[in-house]
Image (cartoon, rainbow, N blue to C red; front, side, top):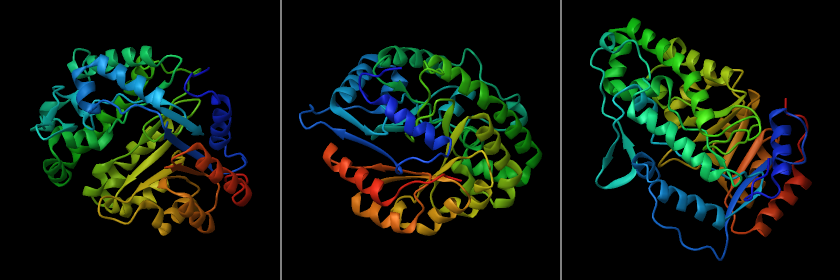
Amino acid sequence: MKLSAKPDLEQAQDAWNHYWAREPWRRPLLVANVVRKNAQKPAPYDQYFETVQGNIENIRKRIDWMLDATLYLAESIPYFGYDLGPDQFAAWMGNGAFHFSQDSKSTNWVEPCVRDWRDAFPLAIRDDNPAWRHMQELGRQVAAICAGRCLTGVCDLHSNADALSALRGPQNFCLDFYDCPELVGEAMRQVRSLYQPVYQKLYETGGMSAATGTIGWIPFWCAGRYATIQCDFVCMVSPELSRQFIIPALAEEAEFLDHCIYHLDGPGTLPHLDDILSIQAIDAIQWVSGDGQPPMHTWLDVLKKCQAAGKGLQISGVNFEQIKMLTRELKPEGIVYCVRVDSEKELDAIARWLEQNAGVSRWV
């Protein structure tokens, strides 16, 4: 496979193949996108609004600008994500309607539609659901625009309990764990059965294959099936409830995928970290400390705990000095730095320093 936006694609793929195989490579991986100095200013673009509306010409223009304006350096591989919004999995199961605030088109939501789980069963995604049909057609269109230029991105699914929370409403869903745990268990069993066919359909309609590999919003590339898995709702329940209802769903998703990373979102998820780290099929962790919290790279206790459990790490938004600090504190094996740099020269300096000071042995 060749991509016009990534002339050194084979080198990047080789690095990722070594990463997933936990084989020695010359340094931690680096992902860096640099906007070209002569790039034109992009037109306004609200991702979810454009995709929900199906503004394919605006999407095409955005892809054109992105590829013309961006240098994809080191192990960065160009892709375009076309998610409908954080509640899209719930929308495919429900009435398919997305709502936007008049003050912001940058996010959206679905209205809870389940009053009683018994009336909602069986949970399914109907072929005539408008959001589901739209998603598949959008994937085909985006894949055609991207072909030979960049990859289409694996969706940010927010499946399992996140989808059920959106359908029921978070407050009501929390109460359900105590009022009707047997119905919650049945809902979780049914929503779990949807993950694999949803992934497979989007894999096909998004133009993904063994020839392209997969990449997603956490920009790790994999020759097989890759995704970010998560459950933001987990912070709303105790570890005991999570072990009963949520951890099995996460393990099932991880085992289905060839490789995956877990999005650990905010301090409220930390009581569940041991259980998440116990899922053997999770390859790596992205720790996000959350608004108002110290940046992710300062949470060394969390990062070291993940490494001690044999997980890789995605560390984003760090500069050269912060990478030097982390190199003193963390093992280099399994780390992917997603860095913000202003030039290819700046990125090359980081890469050379890591090769000299953070050689990677076998990641075990």
